[in-house]
Amino acid sequence: QLQFVESGGGLVQPGGSLRLSCAASGFTLEYYAIGWFRQAPGKEREGVSCISRRGGKTYYKDSVKGRFTISRDNAKNTVFLQMNSLKHEDTAVYYCAADYQPIPTMCDISQGYDYWGQGTQVTVSS
Image (tube, rainbow, N blue to C red; front, side, top):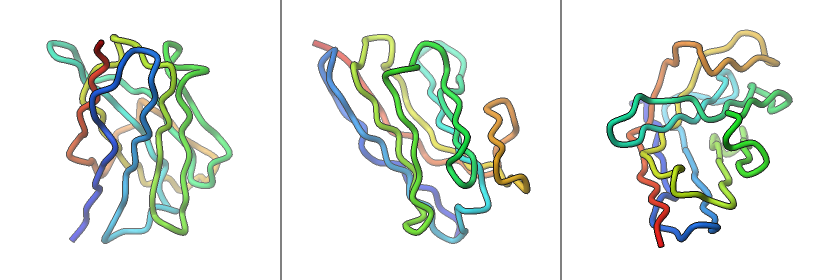
């Protein structure tokens, strides 16, 4: 059974940090570019970051540049999103997703993604 399970969300004060994890089972992440997306209440889902198969290429939405870091450990079939200096506007449900990518150096946040996690809630509030 193919699964993509996120963890690490929670409640944090502004300026705080969280590290989201996304663990895959039933398929091998090394063949996929990975994206992190988020959806805030009443808003459309937006792409936050993506990373290529080997980790050499990354993309970040402008509003998270310098604060978020995406990484992956293919040996552990896991992807991470380190989120620092969190702001109220980062509050959302965060999803990881996998895009089968034959080009190991590519990631494209606008692509259709094949597998999605169930989402983890991140709330930034004082």
